[in-house]
Every structure is written in C-alpha cells, then in structure tokens.
Length: 448
Image 1 (tube, rainbow, N blue to C red):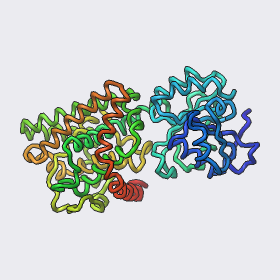
Image 2 (cartoon, rainbow, N blue to C red):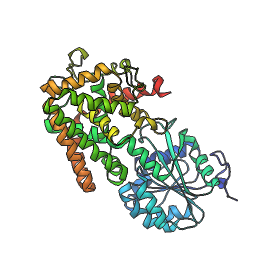
Image 3 (cartoon, one colour):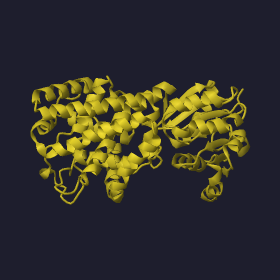
Image 4 (spheres, rainbow, N blue to C red):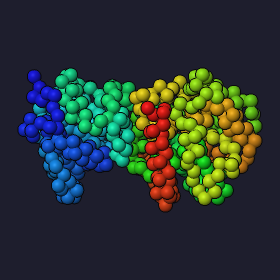
C-alpha cells in the first residue's frame, strides 16, 4: 500500500509527501510558488549549484520551500520529483541526479519535448522508482486555471497517478492523459508549423529593416495585428522553448521541412501568374484541413471579425486603409497541414490554450471566408506591392528549415536572437495589445 493516499495541502506536514523541483527557471519557480501558495509544506528545490545562494535569497520567506544545494539532495529526500530542465540538457541532468532518486519515488519531467526525456529516464533512473511525466501547455506568465496539463503515466501504478493528481490539483488545470509518443505528436501538430511561420515572418521583417505596422501601414488591423502580435510574442520569449520542440521533436522536423517546401512552391506559382493553379491548390488544402463544411462562408469557430477588429497597431491603424495581402504565411501553413494529412483542429480539446486558438484561429479566419481567401489569391498573383515581402518570407522559411535540420542549438539561438534584438524596442508596445487579445479570446464563446 502507498504511504500517501488522498493527500491535500491541508494535511499536517508530517503526512504530506515531499515534493522536489530540480531546475528553477521560470516554470520551476511558477510551480514552486504555486505549490507553496496552495499550502504544501515540504517543497525541496534546487538549481545549478552555482546559483544556490541566489536561489536562497529569491525563495527567502516563501512558506514550505527548502532550497538545497543540488539535485542529489532533492532526489534523496523527495517523494515526487519534477525535472524542470531544458530538453537540450535533460539527458545530462538526469544522468547526474537520477541514480540518487529515493526508493519508491515518482519522477516527472516538465520538458516540452518528451522523446529525450523518456530516453533519459529509462536510461538513468533506478528500476524501483515510478515515472509519471507532466507538461503544462502554457507559459509561466499565464494563469494555470483551466489550462491543459498533460499527465503521462509511463511506469507507475494507479495510486501513483492519483497522488500526482492530488499534488497538482491546486493549479486548477485541466488534466489531459497522453503517452510520450502522443504528446510529441500533438505538440508538433499544433505548434511546429505555426512556430515556423511566425519565426519566418519576424526574420523577413528584420531583413526588410521595417516594423510591419509603420511606414505605409500595410499591416494595421484585424488579422494583420494577430500576425504581428504572435510573432513578437514568440521573439519576446526564451529561444530555447522553441528550439527544443523544433530540433528534438522528430515529428516537428518533418513538418517544418514541409512548411518551407509549401512556402517555396506557392511562391513559385505566384511568380508564374497562374491564378487557377494557385486557387486549386489553396482550395484543395482548405477542403482537407477545414473539411469544407467548416470553411464555406461559415462563421469561424475560433476568431470572429468583431473580435479581431477590436485591435490595431501603429499610428495609421485604420482598417479602411489596409491593402489586400497574399497572406503567403497562412496559405503555406494550411498547405503544409494538408500535405501531411494533419488536422490541427482535432487537437483543440487537448491543447486549447488561448495562444493555441490564436495561432490556429488566424489561419481558420482567413480560410473560413471565400471572399477573404479569394482576395488573398488575387493579391498573391496581381499585387506586386507585397512581392518583396513574400520573397523575404520565402527565404526566411527556407533558412529556418535549414537551421533546424543542422540540429544546432547555438545556430538556432543566434538566428533567433538576431531577430529578437531587432524587435526588442517594441516588445512592450505589442505586449499590451497581445495581452488584451488573449483575454478577449479566452472570454469568447469559442473558448468556452
């Protein structure tokens, strides 16, 4: 029989399981503070040994938290241990601290890519410990309430799963039960192509040397504001969050390569001036991804016109001044999904965070309207004002695909930070609009 059954933060400390957190980055701190606020009284945490004193100062006065010098001490003294470590380093960290794991303890990983995490756990953890991994599908600044929290019962009895559920229940998240393989497939299907698209947008704008909502103000309202804000949201985040998914998730690499191919092929059709060929390809993709009945002038299920028109950027933000846009990035996103037989909307219930709805919703918004889609196709063929932007985007998409194919985190970081530094002076401005947009999406009927 397990020592802990039906536990809650209201139990006296001696009857509570000891919770261990190895790695105190933003997500680690969010978990530590959240568990402390919930009333858990035995929380052991550590970061790199060189950060011991700094972490002590940061956690000083936080109820229930004991800062330890390293992962050996955390592993030896904790009943439930979470490795909150970047996917790039998970193998090294588990190799160091895994053998010290307490007999009968439950071990989890909080990485966004599970393939390397699974390999490390199976290789280095003792046979007499249990494995139940977790993944909060949102960033550390987003409220955990109602958000999906993946639980992966890989090597553990049922009572261990219930214990993990009890410990994490104060976050008020929505549990999603997956396997390691399904986790990586779902996250790739919902994030790989969208990340590639918005990373490429940012790099294209950087190479053009312009902020897209200034100058002639071609990108001023509605769908354009969503594209700009998603792009800046990504570049204002930590580069390693996106690098891990792209480089270490085997499903993601395939999809990012296809995105570059779709972008290139669509751009070549645009250059040829063959309207019929472009229309046939785009409409075939719409039918495969949005299943026809969801995209024939039907109201979009994710983003509405009324919602989008609430937001704008730039001094000349006037929807009436907006010029037609080819939306090559969005056309290529949907073409990629169609080419790989992926239906990202099928994962809406699993990974339906506000940011996810915004990523997928902006593409569905365009494809849900025949009028909007035909306008994009006409602009792609006949309006040369966006041709240089589309060229930069195509080059950027191929560049990101090649970068990821090399499998180099250093190369990814350099490429990411070059663009992030370009947009850095405008992060605060865009973040205000982005926060309001996410709040509106969270409160929209589609989010209920």
